[in-house]
Image (cartoon, rainbow, N blue to C red):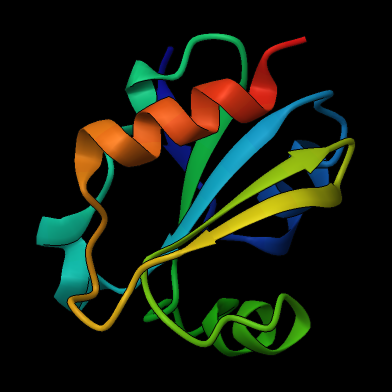
Amino acid sequence: AQSVNLDSFQDIQLMKNEFCAVIEVNASWNWQNRVPLEKIDKCYTGYIDLSNKDIGAVIQKEWGITVVPTIIIFEYGKEVKRFEADLSMKFRQDEILNNIRKEIRQ
């Protein structure tokens, strides 16, 4: 699957049409700790950069983002599960991908 960068409110609205969406909220300065969501097959996957001046602060407030990266699983725009990184500001890649896959099995 291909992941997209959600860099406008329009992109985020379109994501809400998806049955399953896995979105990583991160910041450009922490991009080396990005999780390769392309490895998730059954869901729409995307990234939001909190450094984005247009949407970053709004998303951080509306979604209650307190740490990056945060990965949120949505069903039709409604949050169903959230994973937050620890103080290292990164996930153990295999572990988080397995946890996401467990959550989205239908």
